[in-house]
Image 1 (spheres, rainbow, N blue to C red):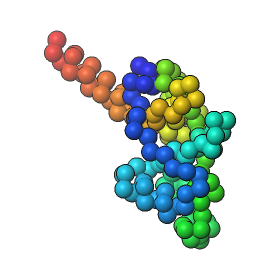
Image 2 (spheres, rainbow, N blue to C red):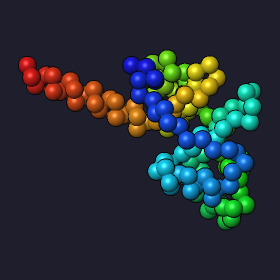
Image 3 (cartoon, rainbow, N blue to C red):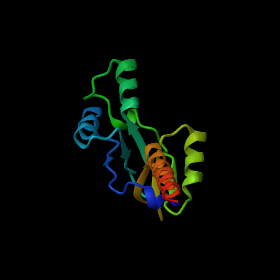
Image 4 (spheres, rainbow, N blue to C red):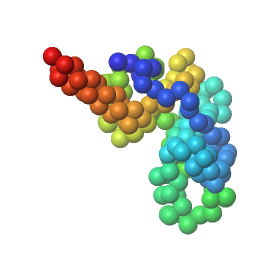
Length: 137
């Protein structure tokens, strides 16, 4: 199974210049726990901002979410994988790097996002399918 088979293709991005309030509002409205932070140019790397990173910043800095920008908080570079990579290698990479999300690129262009939940959901679906096929025999 390849990354392109399970990736989410509707990826929500945000500018590194946005405030934490803007990031949190997008996350809440779109019901997501992370956003891909866009690149400034073709030679830049994508980043990732999560609720956890925002919360850590708010607690440690006692900061005003209107004065702190995404670029102050986000992880860069984001972990990336091509859409033609086998999912088992992406899972290994995620575990080794302790990253629950991977940005999917094709020819340097953002095409998707894969999360640990996406992989686990697919594994469980395959396991259920195998159980149902075995019980039909």
